[in-house]
Picture (cartoon, rainbow, N blue to C red):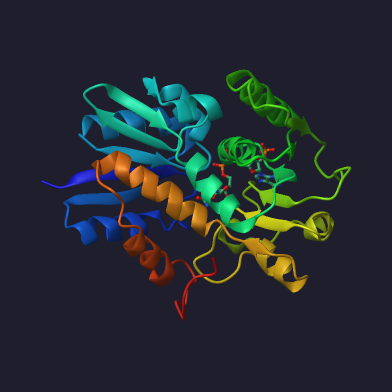
Length: 291
Ligand code: NAP
C-alpha cells in the first residue's frame, strides 16, 4: 500500500514540492506518494483531520496556513515552538507533531548567499518570515529589521520570537513601518512576502524603492519560479546585486521534511535534479532552473 504525504496551502498551483518529493521516493524505491491539495482557511482543520484519519505519514504546510498549523498540532518540536510556525507535520502513534524545517532551509540559503553577516531587513511577517528571522539570528546577524504591510502582525512576530528565544544575545530586533527606508545600508534583504509569487508583478514603484536598499549587499527572494528569475531576482541582476531565489531553501527544507516523513536520509541530488527539470505553470524547461 502507498503512504500518502500531503501539502496543504492556498494557492498551490506554483509548487514544485510534489515533483521534488516524488523524485526522492522514486530514487529510493519507496512506496510513498506526495500530493498537493488547495485548501482554504476555513477548511484547514478538517483537511488535517482527514489526512490523519487516512493514515497519511505527514504533510507539509504552505502559504497561508503555517501559523494555523502551529495551533492545530498536538506536539511541537523545538524548531516550531521557537518560530511559532509549522511547515511539516508528522502523524504517528503520538498523534501529530509539528516541525519547522523552513528554519534549516533558510539557514542554508542565507549561508550560501551572504558570506558576511551584519544588518538584514526582512519584508513580510507571515509563517516564512518567522523562520527567516530566527535563521538570521542563528547565522549571527547583529541587526535584524522587519517590515510588513500589517504592522500588528510584525509586532506580534517580534514579540513571539523574543519571548520564545530571549537568549539571542546582543542582536537587535526591530520593526520598521512598511514603505519606510531602513536607517542604515543592508547586508541582506529578504523577501518573505508573497509578492512576485507565480510571476505576478510587484505593485508599481515598489521594486524601485526596495532595490537600492541592498545595493551594497545581497537579496534573497523566498519566492521561486520554475521558469527563470523571479521579478525581484531579475531586477536585482539588472543592477548587479547578488541574489538568489527560494529554490535552495525549498530544497533544504524539503530534504529535512523528507527525513521526518520517511526516517531515511534524503537523496538530495535527485531532489535538486527534479527542481531543475520539472515543467511547471508556464515553464519551458530549457535548462537548469534559476537558483
Ligand atoms: P503567509 O503566512 O500567508 O504570509 C504572507 C506575507 O506576504 C505576509 O507578510 C503578507 O502581509 C505579505 N503580503 C501578501 N500580499 C502582499 C502585498 N500585496 N503587499 C505586501 N505584502 C503582502 O505566507 P508564508 O507562508 O509566510 O509565505 C510567504 C512567501 O514565502 C510565499 O511566497 C511563499 O511561497 C514563500 N516561501 C518560500 C519557501 C521556500 O522554501 N522557498 C518557504 C516558505 C515560504 P500581511 O501580513 O500584511 O498580509
